[in-house]
Image 1 (cartoon, rainbow, N blue to C red):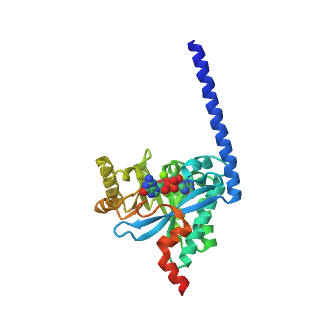
Image 2: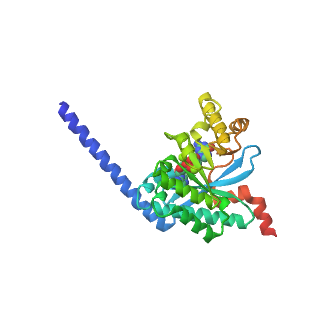
Image 3: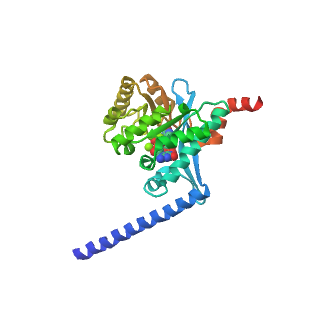
Length: 284
Ligand code: C2E
Ligand code: MG
Ligand code: MG
Ligand code: MG
């Protein structure tokens, strides 16, 4: 009888794996079509000075406007993208779209710094620093208006290659920030190894900041550490004023979160955050 059960569960397990594989293949072919059909969009989330809520920049976050499911968030499809042949195409589309948008805003008189999230594959495929340089050249975007966010799965790769890439990107005048700081295995050692311009405190430490004294201790020391190292520090996941105020009291200057604005389409971002300048520009 025990044997039967084992065999039974084996069959179920196999079916589950087959189902998962099928789902992945369906998703992959849907994603390939999505690229051709232009179903991807970049949303923009405001990054602000915490002291007064004034705009500093925006983080570009990818969305998939699925014909049936509506907007799909990156957590659902980027893991598949990043391990598929589509990775490079989509990453290039993100970089190009963000740079063009930033340049449009720059021309309209709004110096909005735009941050993009790098995909792990972008450090393997070709020369990233060269692509960034070419893109700045092609769009005419001022380099300091572009920022690149990298996560630990990128830093964990070939150290010398990453180091060289960062240096060359920074020489262009583009800043590099460490995203999701504190969630990886060796966040501190990366601060020592790589020439980073700043770090973003992961939202998992910020969401519950007021109620959880451990989170408060971690966030407080991360802010202190950043200052000592001369790094910009950005807190993400700020959902209410009290959290923003608390961060200010701990010396954190910049932040991002639903309290200041959700990720939104470019037009909505313009209306909400650039309205006066754009109106003035078009009236002139
Ligand atoms: P991330 O880079 O850490 O982006 C911040 C995420 O936190 C975004 O999720 C944003 O919507 C969410 N968030 C912002 N404020 C709040 C808040 O106050 N509360 C809560 N609960 N969440 C908040 P999103 O847009 O779903 O993106 C998830 C992740 O997907 C990003 O994390 C990033 O790692 C990745 N991603 C997004 N767009 C791109 C892209 O264009 N390229 C690459 N390679 N990765 C991307
Ligand atoms: Mg990010
Ligand atoms: Mg993050
Ligand atoms: Mg994240």
